[in-house]
Amino acid sequence: MPNELAAALVFLSSGAVLVLELAALRLVGPYLGVTLQVTSSVIGVALAAIAYGAWLGGRLADRLDPRPLLAPAFILAGIATAVTLPIVRYAGEVLRGGAVAAILLLAALAVFVPAVLLSAVTPLVVKLQLGDLRRTGQVVGKLSSIGTLGGITATLGTGFVLVAALSTTAILISLAALLGLTGLALAGYLRHRSRTELPGQPRARAVAAVVGLLGATLTGVAPTPCDVETAYHCARVETDPTRPSGRTLVLNSAQHSYVDLADPRHLEFAYTKWFGAVADAQAPPGRRLDAVHLGGGGFTMPRYLTATRPGTSNTVFEIDGGLVELDRRELGVRAGPDLTVGVGDARMLLGRHPTASADLVVGDAFGHLVVPWHLATREMVAEIRRVLRSDGVYVQNVIDYPPARFVRAELATVGAEFPHLALIAPPAAVAGQEGANFVIVASMVPLPLVELRERLGEPGIQPVSLLTGDELRSFVADARILTDEYAPVDQLLAGT
Image (tube, rainbow, N blue to C red; front, top):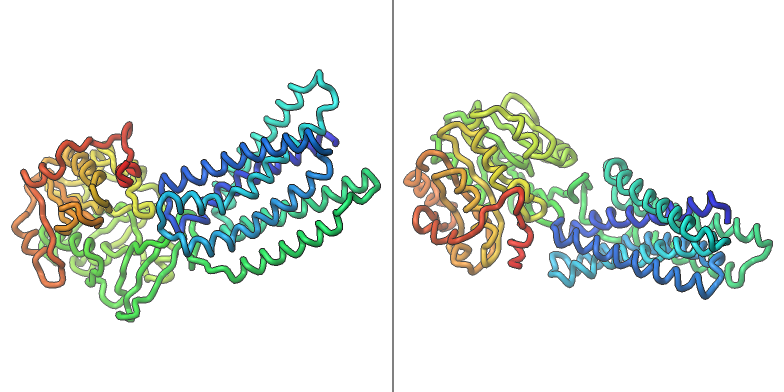
């Protein structure tokens, strides 16, 4: 085989595995979320497939002539890539929100088979190029480096270009087509070189065509969990059947925001009512505030503050520009004097925000159901303290489950920077009986606890516990402060 062709095949097959891996993360995200466990599972399964594929390819290369195996490897990999879409989408509906076994199974369905087939290509090509045993190291080293370059190119190209330009479906179908066409072209080239038709090739091509068409058909009818696929989320907006003007923003299968298009004062989710109670206790309705929001979602709280406090200035930091565009189109979000939207990482943007410029900082940024770890550390809380005025208040939404290890650690972390602290949560969650939203309230000055208790006791707000003082210290116990050096957020949530 010509050296140029050998290099191209290794480059393409190695790069395709990395495209598959990154696309698989987006493919399973709507069903399992985007957590460290999901990411680790996809990477682990992909590495297992690479290892097994390399072993299998080497074994076959020693027992059989590699030439008739290369084209079928690409064609079958293309077919497997195409049918991955319907398989994962049907299986995802069954395994949605599952435990560790479900995460590993869906990750395997998304990437294992095509990655095994593609990883078998390199040892097959290596065997063909080993014409001189004195150059074994040079041949293996060169092709290995080319494969690595293929993986690097695919990783950067997918992360910076493909994900921004194409949907996951388009990426995988395009990759499947590229692999299939490469296999067919390679089969024609090798047949021309040998001047003979390899046994079984016409039947194999017919079977491949039928399976490919079946995969394309299933992809067309498979359920899709997204209205819009952004760079970070599978997103859709649902109408509330009991409230015609109500809209729920769903990100990666989780309900993230509720907006009443006709009444921005309406707060549906319990934790947003607690946010509203904190704002009302801090400053009477009608008094303007300068508020900074870490995470935009459906822009529920900026709407509420603007409606209850005309003249309020809301600055929202949202990492997902595609989500902001969806909010503009479906939820009527409009930038103006009362709303400034910064698209980018909240920590980076907050670092450029003026010192002592905010009365209220609202922390409500999530990756699926998890606070991004770098937004949960003491260093981040110190930045929030810098941005707040001396009498400003920080409120943070946290989701946790028994035994509530993460919220305890986050309370310890926030308390390391703010001397006055409180926790709002359902009594059953405080008692360790259920998972729930927890809202942390912090300030450099004493909190308006009397007013806050009154607001939390108003009609429409379910009974909650407000922990302060010794009761709160007992709840936090000996929880460790999270820092940029130590912030195992996913592990704390998993209870491991």
